Image 1 (cartoon, rainbow, N blue to C red):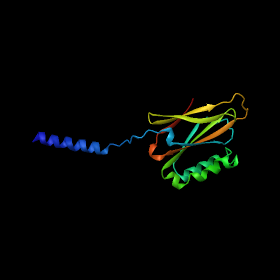
Image 2 (cartoon, rainbow, N blue to C red; image 1 turned 120 degrees about the horizontal axis):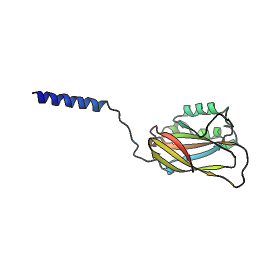
Image 3 (cartoon, rainbow, N blue to C red; image 1 turned 60 degrees about the vertical axis):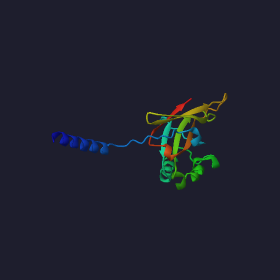
Image 4 (cartoon, rainbow, N blue to C red; image 1 turned 120 degrees about the vertical axis):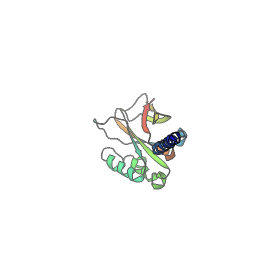
Amino acid sequence: MKKILTLIIAIITISILAGCSTYNYINSYPVNIDDLTVEYIRTNGYYEDIEYPLVFVIKDKDQLESYFNEKKDKYNMESDGEDSFSSKMYKYDSSFFESNILIALLIEEPSGSIRHEINSIKEGNNTITFGITREVPENGTTDMAQWHILISMPSHLYNNQNIDVEFN
């Protein structure tokens, strides 16, 4: 009788402990560079007290509008007409955010002539790392430049991982 009672208590204890554990979803679909849409937007605004790159994950239209309103006084979000940050916002409406997230990378360069390209993605240790190639011309300008790199990614590929940037 003691063995049966001990067995029942052990089964109940294991059931309770197993039922209370959290489930850590692991994305079985690796992020592929072909899954992304990337836009590169120059948004000048020089600030000495900011360490770049900055990373923001935007999950809905309200967050995007808040981000824009927060940054528009620091950065020229309405520069360059049709290539401005504000002119691109119409694409990121509620229907976009139903199945996508937007990752905003804010970087600074010592020259406005330097261009960028996302060329790799690595996943590991709960982090997605975007590899960025800097295209530096032989003769560049001496103006400081801040860039927003907007990365559209299907939301099913993002599970609240950390986002990192690596310059190649």
